Length: 258
DNA sequence: AAAAGATTCAACCGCCTGTAT
DNA sequence: TATACAGGCGGTTGAATCTTT
Image (cartoon, rainbow, N blue to C red; front, side, top):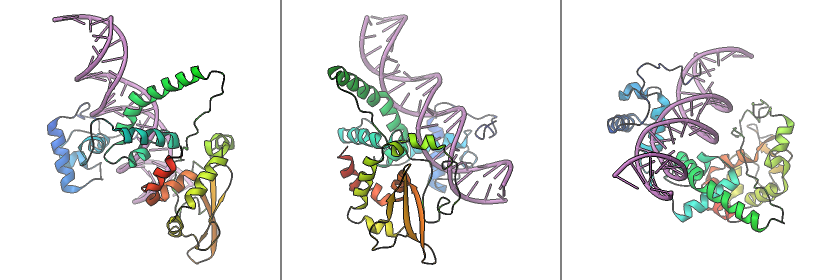
C-alpha cells in the first residue's frame, strides 16, 4: 500500500469538483492559508484526499491563474525553455506568470509536441541527405544546493549514487563544452558575482567555479569560520539556487541564443 | 442528424525527496 | 539509523467536447 492510498479511503470523493466543493476549499484556504494539506479536507469539510485538494487549488482555484489560449510569446518561451530544461514543467511554469505546470504540460502534449514532431519530420524529409542533430536538454537532478547542503557536508544523496555510466549519459556529462560556455557566460553577467557572494563565495577571486566532469561544478567558498572550503553541485542546482537570476531577464537573453 | 474518431484538459497515480521523530 | 509522513513532481488516464464523415 502506498502512502497516498494509506489515507482513509472510505467515502473519499473522486472525479470532477463541484462548485460547492470549490467554494469550501477556497474559503478554507482564504481563512487559513496554503499548506498543511492533510488538515485541509477535514477543516474544509471536504471528502477529498489532501492531494486532490492541493491539486485543485494549485491548478484551478488559486488567484491570478491565467486561463485561455497561450499567446505567441508564451508559446515561444515554452519551446525555448523545453529545449533548455526538458519536461521540467514546474520550472517552465515559473517563467510564465499565471500558468500552471499542468496547463503547460497539457499544452505541450496536445499542441506543441505534435507540431514540433511534424515540423521535424518535414525538415528531415527535405534534408534527408544531411544528418540531424539531437536536442540536448538540461535535465536537473532532484537535489538542491546551498552552503550547508548535504552535498557540501559530504553526505551523498540517492542522486549522487547514480551509476557512473548514467552520469556520463547525461547531457551535461557527455556534452560539456556548450554548457560550460553557456554557464560561464551567465556567471560573467553583470551582477551575478553579487548573487554568488550571497552563497558564500569570496569576492575578488578570479573565478568561483571550476567546471568539472559529469555535470558537476566545483566551487571555492567561505565556511562559517572564514576558512576556504570546497564544494560543488550540478549545473541545474545552480540554476535553482540563483533564483533572482532565474526570474530575471538574463534568462531571456540566454534563451534568445537557443 | 447521428455515429465515429480526434482532441482537450482536469484529475489521478506512483514515485521521489526532505523532514520529523 | 530507520521509519513515517507531507509536499511536490511528471506521466498517464478518461470523461467531456469538438470535428469529421
